[in-house]
Image 1 (cartoon, rainbow, N blue to C red):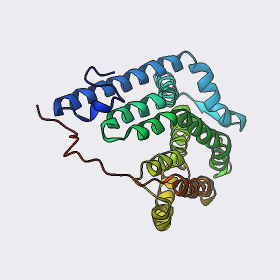
Image 2 (image 1 turned 45 degrees about the horizontal axis):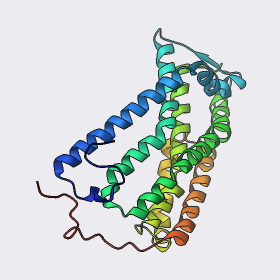
Image 3 (image 1 turned 45 degrees about the vertical axis):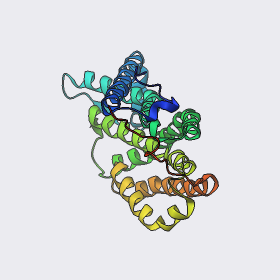
Length: 259
């Protein structure tokens, strides 16, 4: 915690520019420390993690090959860092929120803190959907695109797209939580979201295309359907939780005080 102000001190709204920069440095140190610690913890379980991540391909009879001497180390570090990032996600988000705290009302800060456990739950649901539903379909499609060929895949390439797919689908499942917080803070409303549903569909299609490991419509549809459902669920939450936000008057309560 920074020596300049507590993360949720109501007097933190009055800080000098230098204090804000020092606070930013403190938050970044916390985030980096959390990533390092969680990655080290994951390293103790690298064998279990690697076997779990590669189980889908191996169950389908696909051979994963180590093609370079250092690939094994790279795979271990990559899987451990991805798992560590997921584990550190609540700390990362907390530190981001703590840095933003001077611009929030006390009740907004409390609402955000109460949602931290939901971050891991939603991420876990999204990651599970990606791994147990989307990944088998994608791997099955990729392994059967060309007949008459043996499926011997580079292990590092396979792990690249598995970790990317699982991580970003997990992140995308945070959408309802983010919208709920924004609605509670009065920054977004249900009608406003509903008015831009067409643009939202375009964004979802672009995100699905970026996340999906293949370009076939089956896999894109599998990704898009839950994202669309999450969008409309978010709209519903915005209708329920929206509270008009009174602007803070920083002419009376300065955000950055004079030196």
